[in-house]
Length: 312
Image (cartoon, rainbow, N blue to C red; front, side, top):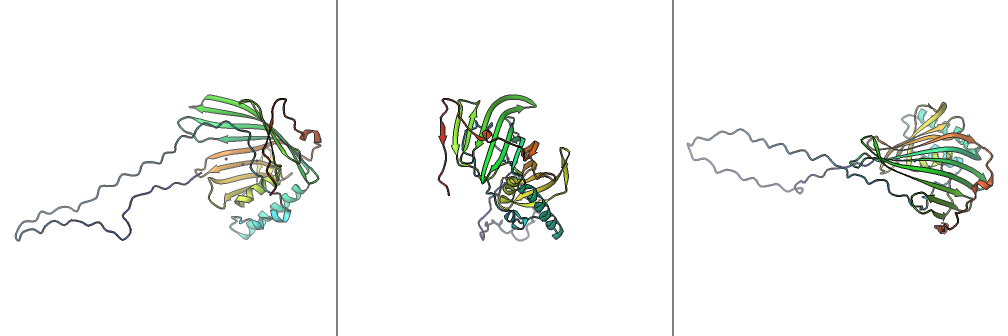
């Protein structure tokens, strides 16, 4: 479940069609010696100051809010790269991308449950305050029960602020997210009093391979890069670049050739700086996961805030 701007410096110019009137010196009297002057050279205009970016504030305190809507799960035909304006320079590359997606789709169609350890990292830009890092480690479980998505994610987050290589601040909190097929429940604790909420169920399973691919193609043009290896496993590598305006320059995702799982995802801003990363470890495909794991109970004394919305 992956975090770049272009700037322009405006220069003042005269309105179009208007010319500034230049005063001419009076003509010299007849026979007078005219002093010759070297042509005047306008002093170079000082270069505009380098653009300065206001220091970003430290990472805000997380609030238990409803997660954004997930990409809609579609049929294999709709997942086809034919619906994506892939930036493939040749027909051969486009055909190779189509073949890879077909191969992955076959693996995704056979995936009914997943368990994994999901590591997420969110990097803040360097500024006078320091450098921020939010790192999460989650135990992730997913299975299908008929047409229902069952999801559980137990996460522990650490927010650190460093300056000159030294850690100057640290906060930790936990977050539990459970989808029982009817609703999504969340519980956040550690920063202040525990808070719980209930919201609509997601439309995709967040970290499974198909969901990651659909999220990628919903916003980006996709190009297939050279095959690689990640954590000792052969992977397909896809690069996505936004079709419209975006703070993000690109994302690069590594899909397992063996299982179709999205093993790694990285996101870059327009300076080429990595802004966030997601890595899946200890991935198991089609493990037995009991239904009891997808039940949610709030701690005693913690009310559940209802954030559900009418369908549609």
